[in-house]
Image 1 (cartoon, rainbow, N blue to C red):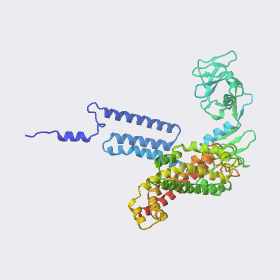
Image 2 (image 1 turned 180 degrees about the vertical axis):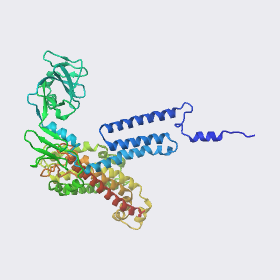
Image 3 (image 1 turned 30 degrees about the vertical axis):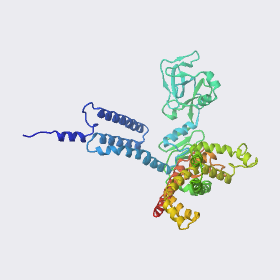
Image 4 (image 1 turned 120 degrees about the horizontal axis):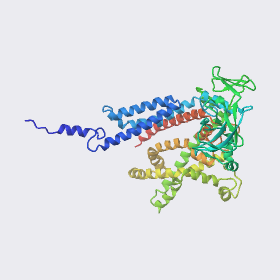
Length: 534
């Protein structure tokens, strides 16, 4: 007689995830379905958004990732991949994509005047050259607001239409107009009172600058207003010929032809301000070293970047090690309290500390000149050399507590037998430090010093908060004497205002990445030799 024990069934049940079947209450399976529903909803929203803006690369990548997620989490054979799939997605989105996109921008002319497609550049050129159409009618107009943006409501022959900067005019029903024909009630919109226009200067500027397209075709013109109560059609003096790829000024007859550099250029060399993004190859990398207005300042910035990173690491490590040796002596009383005081600068937010030091080094009102230099007129932040000295000093104040902590811990971990043997052999304090203490300390602190070098090579906070890169170099480069490469890249990118050149900024970012990577690799390779000391 055969007895069925049920053991294989129990073993199979134990190996199967509770999220793969509907057993018992089934909460695990429900949770899995809900989570995958959220993932699919998010993925579909990204796919449709990419389709809407015709971002085909994002569309293909997001579709592939969404299909992969559904296959991995609903098929038995791909079950092991579910543990590494979130990490792979994170790696692709936050690492590979960012690096790849930075590399793509570095080979383009993306920046001010070149931020879209050719059609977008054509529309921008048509808009920039808009003038009021001769003999065009004047429409009663009201400024409307829906909470997110303002727009115009006009009354054209008894029909009220509403539009915004991004939404062309569309007729609306149920609107109420006054005796002058001006819209006073529009469903879904709030009429902005004329009194608000008279008292709010910012709102006036927005209204005067606002243009509402008449239709989706940019050549049909737009509605603009000067007084906030009436509007007229403005149209461009340029005509776009898509077959010849030319923009013709109808008033002067000048023809602007599309070039391979992403500009509309006339025969006399003049060009329109609106351009589009094109691939420029290695031009950005070449411009960084051949452009006379940029190469000189960039070379000085590069040399100062290396000096800043190296001196910061050496001075902060040296001062931290000195204090660690002194306050590691057991003969000093209240060592714990004193050590706590030493690490206080490390506890303050760096950007606030930099701002405070900036105030103290102020030429006119700072306490440094008043208290320590008898009221002397020393321009700490306006002189190129003194500004660098101030940066090194403040960064030393911020950084040495870190090395004080590291070196204190490393000193306490040194083998006492080795030190005792050196003393018995007659080695003095300096010989003990030079031949035993420092080499053993370097084994544990060298990797941290390399990391500190890489951090300070890109230490944007201390530069921007203390000097903003100034004082500026003579010329039009926009760079300053105390700029390091990362703050120079910030200025070149145009984020702080002025002309933006994202292509050149991305090219310099890649150069910085390569430099830091090479130096770190060489340094880590050298630190392996220190391990032989142990």
